[in-house]
Image (cartoon, rainbow, N blue to C red):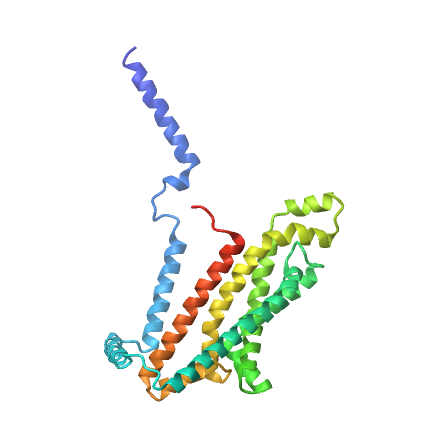
Length: 291
């Protein structure tokens, strides 16, 4: 009897193991089985990468030589020097112009995208047709790069910061429309149901049920876009849309490297200051959450 009980227990355990293996066969199979598609995609990606490296004529010798030239260029950029106080004033004014372009373009896009976001959201749109055309319009605006928008508006309104503001406005309108509509769709429905159950209208449900949830999220997105647009406004200035980008482009072409490094440091300091201020504004509204 003593020898039969262990045999019976082993038989029961073996049966349970077989049952588990049959029920969860995918978990017990070797890791390489069932992964043929993943391996094929990884191989295809590797082949595409290798073809891209070959077709673009990339070579480690050129990279090494370029790094040496980059190091020599950085040494020629030190110390940063604006040249004269008059030039430093010109750089500061151009930086303020860049900030104005970023601020106006971001605010205009946020103001226009805010009501349009409700039309593109599933839970607040008028009908599916309106939502479809609103979403596709945002995709179209977002699909065109900001430099292309800058070139378009330069041909329409001429050179200067006004073209830069319009370029940022068009680019951010598509981005804000998508982000705002997704935030509206992610809002909790319970506050809306509570407002409607007490006799509130649809507008009241949006005002008291959805907006309190959205405002911190939307504000955070707008502040981040303002910080990002400060860098973008510096880039579009290269094509003549105003701001400090045109000055930076001229310094690069004429190899005025010390002045170029001064302008780059000015842009970095400005972006860091904006990031600090935006963080304080964001925390003052949403509060500092405990870890």
